[in-house]
Image (cartoon, rainbow, N blue to C red; front, side, top):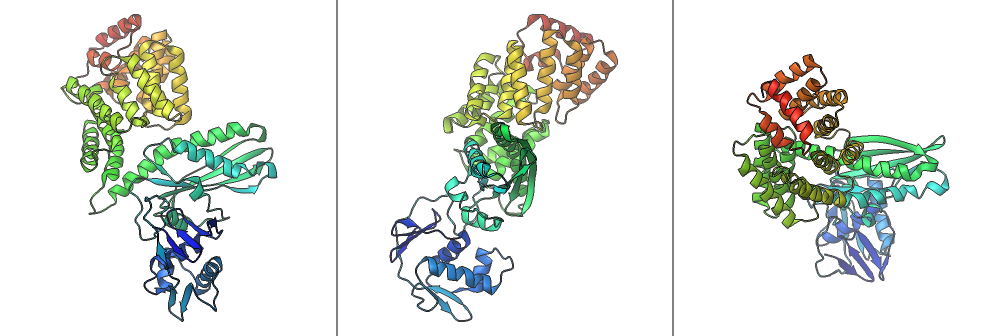
Length: 514
């Protein structure tokens, strides 16, 4: 809904004031005051109400409120004497008294600024212009250029709503009021940054804030030489995206768990599903499956939730958590296909489709889907890991190494880190470098989240390297994690095509009783 009075137009969804069709520049907080007065023009708005709504309950003086009212009047051609637009009710509050004509409703957007509207359930983020602290003039453009590149990169993520540059770049203050940003833009998260010259280099300090709690969820500082700005810009974007992929879903899951008795919506169930998905136990996989199922029940067109169900079915087949492996494999394919049908551009849906082809020993087809996932999102660490896994199955050592290195650069703390190290160990066994394979196998099996198949990689690699004490240790660990583990299960999970290494691996497994 937009409003017209005189030669002015206020559009809360676009967050702008126009005079004769031309934008009027004014502080965001002033525009919030103006919108609130227009929205409630049928009554008087008290000072306390303005304080609660605009300042979100933070301490504010009468002088500050009067200053915003004065600026709003100036913006619409009013003044304290005439009061033809905003009228003061002495000692109590204010009323918007100009005659208003409402326009036709516009499509709702995340930029709507009704302070009483709840934040959207889908996570949303505003990327603010960076502050240029001590920067040569020719580099100040980076304060806008880097956030712009971040916005473009984040727009590839299908699970995160990114506020458009035209809205978030309005908040160009030295110390932005994050509560105001959240209210004005409907942003659950805000990313801010500082640019600073340090010697012959440039540093960028980043901070990700949850606007509902004012808590800093993540922060970091990256630096680079002035003559390598392009490299620094690329590192900032990739580093940030990998951080958001970890910290926002984790925070969303925690918020959902703290929600008390209020029923969870589809997005909250989805994030709780992710919370359990990467623990790789039978119980957690089942809990993840329940949450993804609830999300689909609430929103049958929720592509990511269908992809989540594909992931859980994949784990049931891959880890033999379901005795009917064939049925689980079919479910993994079916759910992935539904996710693709609903959103063919979602990298996660393409990722789960690719992984479903592992289960049917079709690595070439799997690689096509996984390449599509990383094309849709060039910063998708798990997509590069899965592509490397597939290249390992095909015996392509160069592509395996390249994919693993990219995955590690993008996400050094990825929940599938054990798999990244395990694939490297398996590839090294295929090339005959058993000592290196044993080192990477140890590292993989000792990584949090590693399942029994990863311990089997460590067992085989150490046995082939002649490290029999270490191999015996990993054998006990395999049996502890899955007492009925077999060599057939190993080759079902890792159906490599190199027959020579397969024969050696099978012999070692049989020698250890598998």
